[in-house]
Image 1 (cartoon, rainbow, N blue to C red):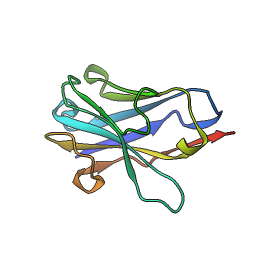
Image 2 (image 1 turned 180 degrees about the vertical axis):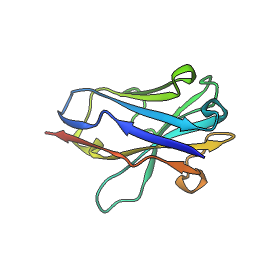
Image 3 (image 1 turned 45 degrees about the vertical axis):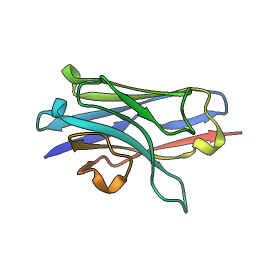
Length: 123
């Protein structure tokens, strides 16, 4: 089992920045790929960014490429999502998720999920 807890969400004006954190406990976190997902009201959960177990490769949705950066610190059992130049359409609940093996963009392929953190971007 891997337990995940997100933090760092909040209310920010368009153009601002937030840094989300995902703290992990349980099994050896460094064995797991981690993805950040988001879900806006009335919409499906979507992939935002992912990072391999080593941190050597990262992946982004086209909508956030160049604005968001994912990173991990396995010594601290943590993954981060730095979000810059935020837009109102980034408003959503953000979740981190973990899976053994490679990164996937489909939420259904992840075994472990956090409870989510709300990000609201005002125009």
